Image (cartoon, rainbow, N blue to C red; front, top):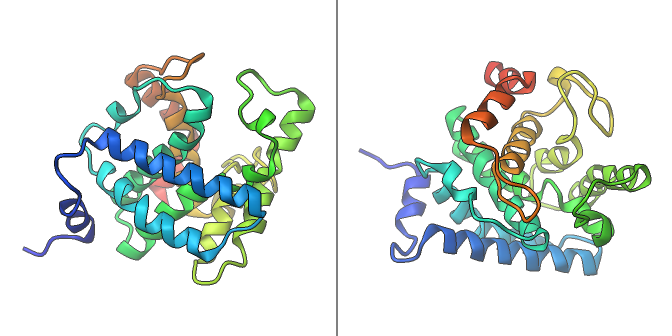
Length: 236
């Protein structure tokens, strides 16, 4: 029987290296790449190539883990969590894409979109991005601009589909039109943005942080089942 592309990629990962170690390494790769983007103020195509080569295969393997929830139970400080979160969102989004039966090409695009959904935060002050407490009104308005900044950074990169930039722009839109930055609703929101939005919330709720304990798995599921956007994706 012919094996799918994900299975083939997993076989080529060294079996003696723990998956958590590979996730840590992938997070470090993303950290270095995002720091370069912050310094340069733009995304070089070579950075996309590096993400696909160094990070995407780890996400593909982790998404096939039968107990994804267990991958997020290690506590991390905010400066570490920021980049592990990007990998975690990639893992969950890829898992959901697999369950939805996306093609190999679309699944690859979704994985890349998930890893880059927050790239606009490279234009936001670290004092805001890594603030441990609640943002004040002015800080929150500044933070919200990361969706537009991400779109601007991604929209003109040659060789990547428009869905990548749209996901960065729309991942805070909501089914009821109460999201930002455009107040879109329903089918006006790209499927990848909907999937990444769910992955984003799931990872945040199921992760241990210095000041925040992960919610029990059943509570995460209960809360997300109350979110109409989950059901809307399954009906898409």
